[in-house]
Length: 185
Image (cartoon, rainbow, N blue to C red; front, side):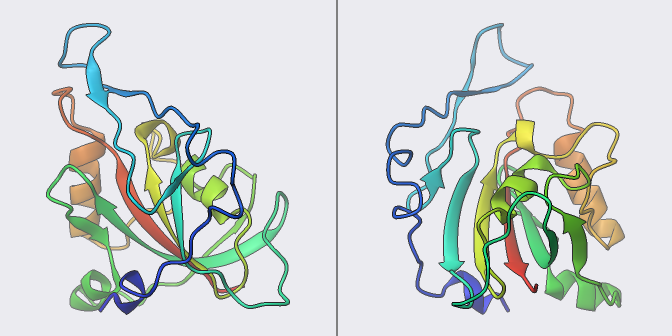
């Protein structure tokens, strides 16, 4: 099913040598707690923390000889998404799409155009064709309240699971997401 998730991991330490240990991830604001309190953000083992709070791990660096994606480049990618707090529930996977009879199309975007969530936009930068990267996305780099930004799940169940987490007003739910992206070109 997700064989590329268990593939040998390629470290980004060479790409971001000074950032890996210096980034303070801070606290996740949780409205159900007293002002100033929150959950300390988790540093995920094997991931590199970037200054924005995004944590990344390259599973496959992509094809040699292809250029790295940068601001203004058009990128085509596939993705899978999981909620961290809601029992790691998937909200977009190939298996869910097959069960729902959905034939998904890859997502197309221009890096920096503001059409995809900030965590994916930042995570795609530096990727090559054929590259696979895992993104551990904090809430401030995630979906907007108006649900304008993509990509959105292709199934009704996926949308319900994602919306349950992102729209939760109780204030105690961690809204961090794990999204896997695979660049097609």
